[in-house]
Amino acid sequence: MIEESAHYIEFRGVSKAFGDHVVLNDVSLCVEPGETLAVLGRSGVGKSVTLNLIMGFHQPDSGRVFVAHRDITGIRERELLEIHKKVTMVFQSGALFDSLSVGDNVRFPLEERMELSESDREEIVDGMLDLLEISNLKDLMPADLSTGMKRAVSIARALAAKPEAILYDEPTTMVDPLMSAQIGDLMRKLKQQLKLTSVVVTHDMALARKVADRAVFLHDARAAYFGPISRIYQDGAPFIREFWDLDAMPAAGSL
Ligand SMILES: Nc1ncnc2c1ncn2[C@@H]1O[C@H](COP(=O)(O)OP(=O)(O)OP(=O)(O)O)[C@@H](O)[C@H]1O
Ligand SMILES: [Mg+2]
Image 1 (cartoon, helix red, strand yellow):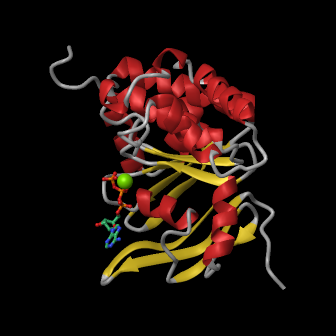
Image 2: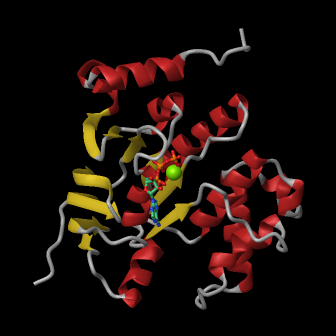
């Protein structure tokens, strides 16, 4: 019998190494429907690997990964495509098609949905651009956009496919603080309006506080903290507090 998880996403004792390099060692975590989990930790600790495991792009060496309540460990390619209709990822780079306008980028995932008429598609594209507050960008090309705007477009494109869950990899790196705050506000709005289950990988503690219900802090291949974001400062280890404090300090030169 295929085992299911009561959680929307669950890692049950997941380990993953690349050669001798153990990236995750017996990591367990879960995400409930409609909840947002922040994945925190230093560079190279395995945050993107965690997202790739959720997408089924990597397989764990041991342990089990459940997504959309299903055990996806060792799942067949065709079944993984079904999971990808429910769970979608916004990549670190944004990864827009350079030769397509903003509107056509957002329309792209709709092309294979034969049940939609041309006017349905137009309506969904306009709705998504409106939700992300970027309707004015519809006819522009990716080359005309700032990094922050590209992020917003790639979120709109991911959402056009009507997923149940969305994974964000560093949505606010390389954008200015104002844009970063705007992306955070948008993510919070999406969570409230669409009840999307989300996982957000970030170094940005202000963003984590704004959007996350729970957090996992990865350190030395382990989940050093997994619990409510509101308790991480009090209950986390001293190095977690240090990480938090450093992030809250103004950058050198900005004083
Ligand atoms: N396909 C791969 N093959 C070999 N090693 C990999 C692969 N993917 C990731 N790694 C290694 O796994 C470790 C964790 O990588 P990961 O990209 O998850 O880090 P990260 O926490 O996302 O870091 P950053 O904050 O810099 O994005 C790194 O040491 C990386 O070199
Ligand atoms: Mg990464």
